[in-house]
Length: 305
Image (tube, rainbow, N blue to C red; front, side, top):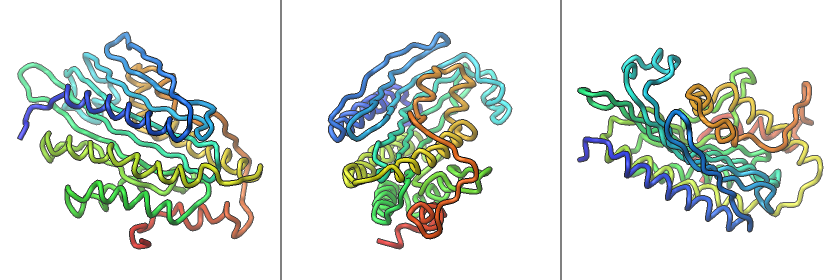
């Protein structure tokens, strides 16, 4: 068992994962991701890849970042006092795909590694990540496939892993001010180190590797669905929930901004078009109403297989 975290192996995997995801999604879309390589004055950098105005993807961003610094921000050490006085490195791949078609759901995924070190002490490290699905119009078969793929990725690591991280996802991607889930969930984990480095890294890879099998079949199934202006306007309205969550609650967004990260890359997850409407209520029993009634409340999707 590896006891010393292998930062280089993690970074190599993350870069390869970014390549693989971009290549596959670009094939579905027929377009290409434009790459923007950047450096951070305080240390580190990354490469941001964005596909905009594609045939399938209205805006998609797949970002790799590896940032470092001599000290953690005060907001972080207040919650994690053991990080005080340590240098840190944080690396990860984070992506959000906003399809054009209202029947194709938005998806988000993130896998990341954090390590804080100082002379004469063992490093403090952990993995985190997960993925979640945000439909605008609900389809049971899509939700079942998404969660089945997530469950299969977790299965080699224990029977309790998927239920635990599924519940964590349901709790995390929740807009408290709306009393509403952002989407239909998936997986969320953080502070993972109790398995040891090798197994923790293996689990992070399992999650990262399962994103495309979870999402690509859904995207291909829905990308050509006929729709009208009604569905498009509802999609733009529901995208507002996505923006609200990312700017108010998302840990990655807040960490990036607090550590002086690159704003363009941090906010690449936001959709290109969005709208808010005062006190909107969909017609009872309409497809729009069924989204919040039948799909957004947390539930056991595997029971519907």
